[in-house]
Picture 1: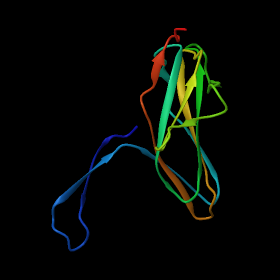
Picture 2 (picture 1 turned 90 degrees about the horizontal axis):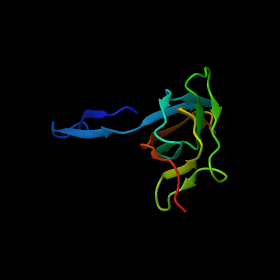
Picture 3 (picture 1 turned 120 degrees about the horizontal axis):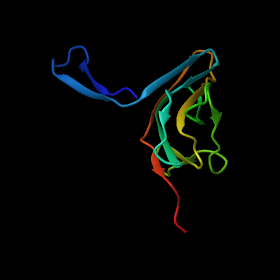
Length: 141
C-alpha cells in the first residue's frame, strides 16, 4: 500500500498556504464497463488463520469491487489457489466502509486479488486499502 504525504496548493485565488493530505489507499480504475484484476505480492502468513479487513474509501461511478485471498506452500509455483473464507462473503462493519472475512488453514504464502467491474461506459474507480491482518493459531472453546 502506498503511503506518504501529498502537498497541494489551495484553490486559485486562495492564500499560498499548503494543505497536507495523507495518501492511505490505492486507486483501481476501469473504463468502458470492463473488469480489471490485480494481485498483491506474496507475503508470509503470520499464523494458520487470519481475519482480513479492507476499506472502500471512495468510489467513482457505480463499480463492483471485490477482494479474494490466494495461498500456496513456499515450494509451490504459480498463482496459488483461492482460500476459502468463512460464510458466504465479506461481512460489512455496521456504520462504516470496512469489510472483513475470516480464513482458516492458510498455507505459508498469502496474496490478495482485487477485482473491479465497471458498470458505466465512461469510468469507474475505487479507492481502497487493506488493513494489517489479524493472525491467530486457534480459537479457544
